[in-house]
Amino acid sequence: MVDSDARESRPTVSRRRMVAFTGAGLLGTTAGYSGDGKADPPSNESTNTAGPSPESRNDEEDGAEDGCHEDDDYDIVVARDGSGDYETVQAAIDAVQPNTSDETRVYIRDGRYKEKLELPADRPNVTFIGESAENTVLTYDDHADKIGDDGEEIGTSGSSSFFVWGDDFTARNVTFENAAEPVAQAVAIRIDADRVAFDNCRFLGNQDTLYNFGRRTRQYFRDCYVEGDVDFIFGRATAFFEDCEIYCKGEGFIAAPAQPADVEHGFVFADCDVVGDAPHESVYLGRPWEPYGQTVYIDCELGDHIRPRGWEPWDEPEHGDKTKTAFFAEHDNSGPGYTPDQRVDWSHQLSETEATAYTRAHVLSGWNPRRRLERR
Image (cartoon, helix red, strand yellow):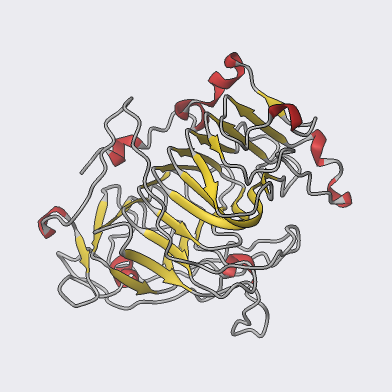
């Protein structure tokens, strides 16, 4: 499998209080993987189904931000009706001071912003704050089979509605959507950056909705809603999902991890509700996209759509026996989908002691994403 990390360079611009650049450039070339190593299963029909946000845990201040605030609280305001600094999200991104260590807060008023977005690597420390999660929607409708300007299919990565390359990106109260018809893989957001956090956000799509792409990057999701059917949470990053709703829209697989062999943790779901309208016993908790993929569910509520076997090996002879290298585990789950006695024999049920290795702090290697989220 080959993924290109080619990134379009952007002109250097200043913040809105100085000189702002208003162009909204799209990706020039985003070569994506088009199924060389990951089978190209069909489908992504995005809906506007809004999953309820679970209550935050009480161990730390949740810092959630709801409703409209004074524009003076933000560096940049985006509004489709022209009442802000910019009418498009990409124009706001382009106006961020490059390579700054200061946080740039971008307030996005309610609306559907149909844009193919990219946050370049030289725009770190950007925070998006939506007016409301249900109505602040960043959307596009590319899919893997679409033919690009070069006459080739754009592939899974190329289908992404939003590319995040800037480290320390944070989003609150925003929906990220791929609204393509259900014809192929269609990514809502691809995250290549480190220390990326989402609070009360929604990720809408079908197949391959949330691409946790970046090798050795850390990503955090709190009180979020993620929907899809086939491999709709996938990639190489270390990602911690806390108090999230994972909504299975049809028969398929939730997680498709692909972490490198030397990475300690992959995907961890803690205190999440795994629900949906998929048929009874039709969804696997996950399968290893690459040989050392890791996924763990701890203290999660599992619906009756989860298959009793739990996990699928994704047999690919060229990658050897993945059941000997992948790590899939559970601890203290509940609900009709939790059938530990019927799980595949190569998966694990963690002991209390083993489960202590899966705290947020340990999984994220000491990074505390809630410091940024606590700011209102």
